[in-house]
Length: 387
Ligand SMILES: *Cc1c(COP(=O)(O)O)cnc(C)c1O
Image (cartoon, rainbow, N blue to C red; front, side, top):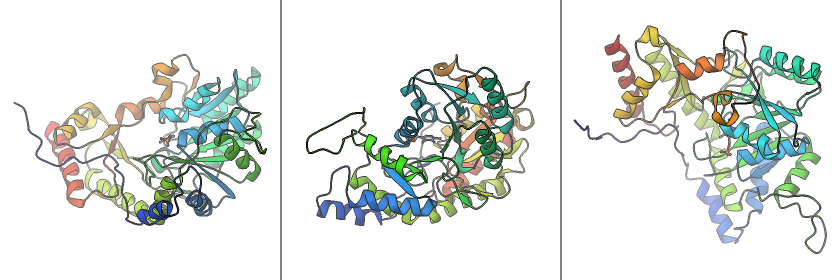
């Protein structure tokens, strides 16, 4: 029997405009600043840098472009390696390949689901012995949760290797009072449509190295040398954010804090209603960190709950609810099948385990309480009836 979907679809994380954005977009129209530069771009950069507490920010066409430029600034080139969190979206690692370099993947640890200091140390020791130290380390803050920076940073410093903090999912989160994205040499944000705030598409590269970011700005605008004619001495890119989209970003930044509160409330409601179910465990929040809870993530032990992730995703889809498995670790992707991987324990990979048992639930800040209750009811029914 074909079941007709009468309920409205609940999305994983859909854009949530405040109404403030249009003011800045109108300004762009009225002044005819429709170019990929202009007053909204400058203001968005200043406002975001001030929010994050860094010296400089460069607005770009995507978070992926921001990672790419950071790698270029750090001199990553053909034949190099870059260490990278394995439990992440493919965009964290793709730009390594753009440079002709290869990623080496580092496992998660259980407390944050982020890069394991133990696995990182192992990877560094081995690379050091073989004289193949990486040019950079990309540390991802998954679903808004910061990685264990106080453990990870000293390891990278010991080997004198710079850090790119991929904070695409963690804008507004903090680690021991410091803003996510400000803890490495470079920080990366994304304003893609599904992120906590959005410009429909866009990104930002931030750093306290102001002169480096000046170079990023130059590379992102086709590397035009100062000259009256078109003069180029380096390969450039067309990576700047448009002044229209930066206007959306300014309006979104004004409501970021309320978006974070909404996502945290959604997480708490899931936790209050589902954490007593057998085999259900929510993504932790490390002590002294504050997560924006971009996505509400949890793991489900199939033996205890009687339900696999696949069955649960199917049941949710039947109710017209969009949910997703946790990111598939990059070391398990066909794209990277020949790349090196260092796991947290010698006999067990934490990221594999999180992938096989992890699920992300609808978390949009514009989701109604009634809709969240639909999600909760569906999961409860599935786990209790399958027991
Ligand atoms: C979204 C995302 C990116 C890429 O950002 P885009 O703006 O979509 O290019 C990079 N890393 C992580 C962890 C992400 O979630």
